[in-house]
Length: 209
Image (cartoon, rainbow, N blue to C red; front, side):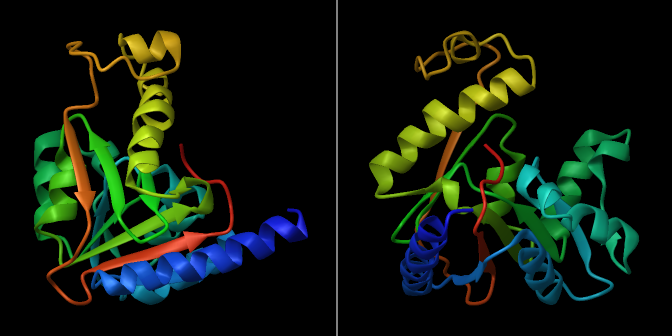
């Protein structure tokens, strides 16, 4: 990665972390995927029950594999026949893994969900929520973050899941009401009432969508 990009991301991450702290959330910066994995494992005690939504970023830094291989109770919904039970298990988990579709430089997190299990777990239930977020998802303000979530993340995810939505065909949000829409719930996390619950690891890399 170009040195100027690294410098820019390092400085921007410090601004984002200050924004998170002002919102009663904890922020960390990892210059590499390996550093991000190390920090994540520091935040998840051995023996903890851990589950996740469809978090590509956690997979990309190697966190999912590390949890499966380590001394953790990883609730793997992909291997559970009862998907509803797997989703409900998230609400009593010690740690829930997620990313964000976008976030602001001032520390607000933006997520769009179809089944809503991810956004509901972010709001309430798991004792700790750990976000893994690439610096590619940091936007200048809430308006730009919402536009990124709707016009970048949502179309790519609709295409990834083979859904029949206008955005999957056009590549941009059409504000549809398609039966296949994944834009059912919009969550803006602007403050955490519970100290120590929400942790955000910013990674100097392009992760997820």
